[in-house]
Length: 177
Image (tube, rainbow, N blue to C red; front, side, top):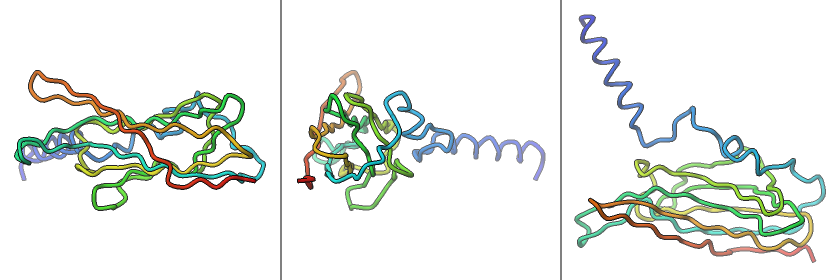
């Protein structure tokens, strides 16, 4: 290969890597992006646990399935307690077939009272498709106000802009009592 061809191949490979829908290795982790909202995980027994299923729509089919519209998705997890930390044990993103796309936590993290953490999925990231969803597993030391989980979708077609919210649904709660 000539020097120009090698340079061209490198530029093409770099361009593909930059526009790839997969999360960049240099993107901040959930912990890094939300550091101001986090505190050390409590040392007491996490005897209250729960899970939320949060539907998300990274892509939506329109015009009888002939047009696909891609959306940016922001998952927000709010600690609704004013005095207790909320421990997040798992924040996972799945596609429409139930296949794990990405796990956002390497280890549990704790949110300050009334704090919020967010996970952002760019519009170009269509790995999860039309049936995208999140699973949020949480815990606390003693009873706590139930967390609030929502996914916000933003996108556009031509000069029309769309936004909508999908609320999380509790699928498991175990009380410490």
